[in-house]
Length: 426
Image 1 (tube, rainbow, N blue to C red):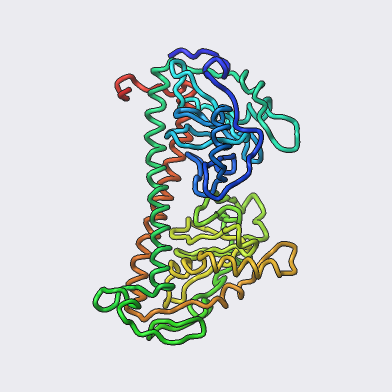
Image 2 (image 1 turned 45 degrees about the vertical axis):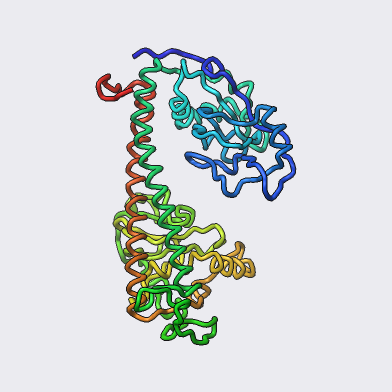
């Protein structure tokens, strides 16, 4: 397997970017995507800007519309070079200049191989060192970017690499899709039970619309037999603290920035025999504990820790919540992640006198929630716990898959690992 040197422009038919002017937004039009809409594998189309048909047609004529198999890369801003993916399905969208458009010559390079190549730490570091402007906002300079050197094998070898890595990525995407669906299902169930009160009655019919009795409460009308309670009545906060007398030889430290919307992206292993334990490393974490950052609640640094790794310690920047047994942590977490709850906590945080908008444990413990009757509560708990366990399982599987992929990919791209001809059908 021989590698040859090419410049980026030698393996691409087009290297350009999106529109350099942003048309006026409309409420119902065509999608105009920027670097802010990019994710790991695709765009977030739901929250993107929309423009008029007239502006859309002008931008299509101006070559701002990506085509299938184009490689799109974040070109400007804080996420410069961090997002890179292949445009896989033709859509009526146009791009802003914060995204570079690479149109590979598929006789020379597989689009996915180019994506994987540019997404490696080695390539990103080289590009950041020699191909960005010196302005305050990081920006790829296209005329220099075109000269970036690639060392690539023949197209057949590229296809084999793509086949193997894409199989791993497909599984990761499938797991992510399942996680999103389960999260949406949990929100749907919450609304059905605690807002619409259409949970199944004794005859498996929707409670409220089937004539279920409602009674007044301090919140609103609620089903007969239900109660209004505070989170503090069903949950403890910061129950276990690591003391100085406990001589742990290591800790796995979770800081507030390391978890977002129930996904942990990093845990710091600290050898306490060699390094000083961070002063904020105090909160012990047990299975199913909820961690909820007290700083800027709108940034959503929170999650439910289904299976904490050994000696896991959370920052004192979290409130660590643990059910007293009546109400499951999974349901408490569902209450805490409702949009209205997060807005309420953010409003409290913005009124704080501390250096950053922040809340206190008591602000969470004083939130009022509904306590269904025991049989109903047990049924909903069973469903939500099952869904959250599946979410956790898929997240852990994805972490292992990403570790395998990120270990294999540089070695496959460099030729250190060779794929036998018979191992892949191309």
